[in-house]
Length: 156
Image (cartoon, rainbow, N blue to C red):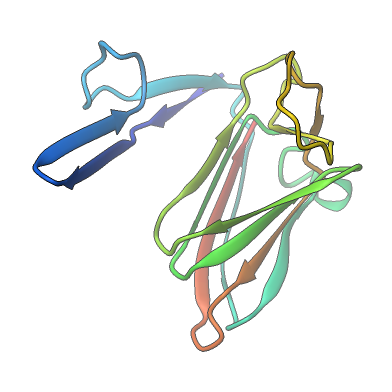
């Protein structure tokens, strides 16, 4: 077993007020990390992607010996604005992210890994959704002029 220690602080200030958001329980100190237990299998990729480049960083079918086939924690960081695409057997989701702001997903249900809802519906869920596992992760460097450095971590 291993632990992922998560420390996140969001501070929004303006109009004479300051609002804070953080990890962990409401009563926990802001300095105390949220600890998530994992089996400890780690997959990591660092690299550079050309301006306007597109790359597949994870493919469950071909890389499960190097990177966990099922993962409980996903962390992605890049130094340029980006899009990250999470693909399942039935659907995909694309998220646009800002440079130097991490994108993080964690598992919290019966699936046992990070999952997505395979649906094209536009109505609210009335029950816990059935999720499917992520099969592929693709990134796209939005900048048309600057190469992007990136860091992907997957932990089981």
